[in-house]
Amino acid sequence: DAGITQSPRHKVTETGTPVTLRCHQTENHRYMYWYRQDPGHGLRLIHYSYGVKDTDKGEVSDGYSVSRSKTEDFLLTLESATSSQTSVYFCAISESWGGTDTQYFGPGTRLTVL
Amino acid sequence: GNSVTQMEGPVTLSEEAFLTINCTYTATGYPSLFWYVQYPGEGLQLLLKATKADDKGSNKGFEATYRKETTSFHLEKGSVQVSDSAVYFCALSNSGAGSYQLTFGKGTKLSVIP
Image (cartoon, rainbow over all chains, first blue to last red):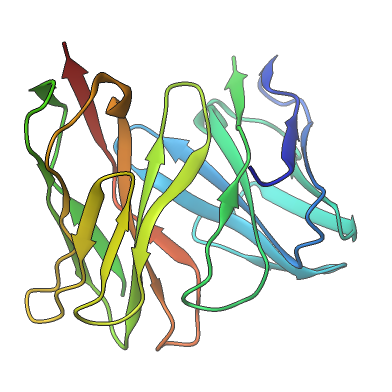
């Protein structure tokens, strides 16, 4: 299994509070991704990173920001959480940026915004 | 744009039954195609992939053939086991358009009963 951990694994928070989710990898892969998984939507890309301090937006980036100060860590921040951000969040990594490359997923963080 | 359509679930089969999960896609260029599996409480794992037309991906008794003429990548297994109960996601990565982000289908939940 790829060495990917996510923390916390579960979190309950209130509307309007800031939340930061962490993804940590031990594979030294250059590319990292944040997805959200919602019933009836599959997985949708929020943000991705192609190197330290290099990030870009995905399909559903509104209300989210990311940072990557080290190769191994990719943080996802909800500046002011809303109930629509209740979801399961997955981090993924890949070794290269190519159409044939496999993405490896972390175990997920279940976030509930009340 | 890119899109993936999977047959809706849930699908319930008896052990040793034949499995087919249909997947069709829309994409420009020459996408790579993937099947990911998600076991309860876990992240997604790559099950198999195919990177060009007529390629067959296979793993753990599962197979899927990349059919460009029908834009399909149907997942099959000859004899399912209870341990195959999971959610299966079809996905594509479109290398022809300069973007390698994964686009997922909505997932198909499979339950196998003894």
